[in-house]
Image (cartoon, rainbow over all chains, first blue to last red; front, side, top):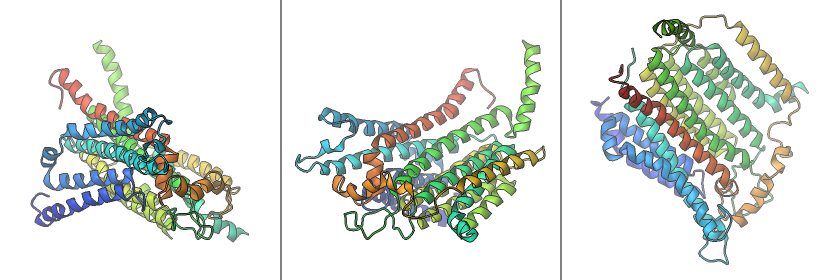
Length: 144
Length: 132
Length: 177
C-alpha cells in the first residue's frame, strides 16, 4: 500500500484531524456524547491508520512501544491517584467534591474530578489499544 | 393480542436470534478465530438487549436540555448506557487476549482447527512417552 | 428494519467460510448495531461501538488473520446436535420474554430504581448535562476504575502471551521461528 499516493496524502491530512477530534471528544464529553473511552479508542485508531499506511517502524519512531505501555499503566495510576488525593483532602475515596477550589460550591470539584478521571481512562485505553495493535502488527507472520 | 405481542417483543426476539447465531457459531465451528467472531456476536446481542431495556418511547438521549430534569422532556434511561459503554471497551480488550491466544496456538500447532489440534495432541503424547 | 438487516448479517456470518469476509462482515455488523444504538437513544454507546467495533476490532482481527491464514476448513461432524441445543436454548429464552414488559414503555420497572435520581438530581449534584458521563465517572466511579483496571490487565495478558512467549523461545536456544 506504500506506493498509493492518494492513500498516503489522505492519511497524512486526516490523522491530525482525527487526533484533534479525539481530544475534542474527551474534553467536550461533559456536554455531548463522548468521554475517555471513546477518545482513547479514536486516538489509537489515528495511529493505527498511520501505521497501516506508512509502516509500523515510522510510527514507532514517534510513539515507541515502551511509551504506550507506560501510558497503559499511567492511566490506571491517574484514576487511582485521584481517589488517593481526595482521601488526603479528607473525603472519601473518589469523592470529587474535595477537589473544589471554593468550598462553598462543592459541585465544582466534580468537574475537575470527572475530567481527571476521564483523562486516566483515555490514557489507559489509548495505551492498551496501541500496545495490542503494535503486538499484532509487529509480529513476524508465519502464515502458510 | 398476538400482533401486539409481536410489536412489543420484536426487539427481544431479534436479540435472542442473534444470540443464538453467536452461540451456534461458537459450538459448531472448529476454527478458533470463527469462534471468537461468534463470541463477539453473542456479546453484541447482550449489549442490544440492555439498550433495548433502556429505551423509552419518544424519549431523547440522556443529555439534559436546560440543565434541570424537566418534567415534560422524556429521557431514556442512562444506566444501561453506562454499563454497556464500559462493557464494549472491556469486550474488545478481552477479544484481543483471545486473538493473542489464537495466534500462539497457531504458532505452536500450525493450525487453528479444533479437530486437528486434538489430533496433534493425541499424536504427540505417545511420542513424548517414547522419548522420555 | 435495522434489526432485520442485523439478523441477515448475522446469518451471513454463520455461512461464509472465508475468514477475511467474515471479519469484514463483522465490521458491517458492528456499524449496523451502532446505528441501532443511535435509534434507541444511546448515542454514547453508539459512538463507542462505531469506534471500537468497526475501527479497532476489525484492524486487530485482520492482524490476527495475517498471522494465521484465512481459510476455515469444513466442519467435520454434522451440525445437528449444536442446532438442537441452540433451538432449545432459543425457545427457552423466547418463553422467558413472554413475561417481560413491552419495549419502550415508560412504566417499566427498570426505569424507576436509580435512574430517576440520576436524571433529576444529577445536574444539581454534578453540574454537567451529559448524564451518561456523570454516572460513569462520578456515581459509578469505582465501577469505571475496575473496568479500566480490567482493560489494563488484558493488555498485560496480551503482552505476556505475545512477547513473553518469544523471549522464552529464544531462551530455549534459537527457537523455531
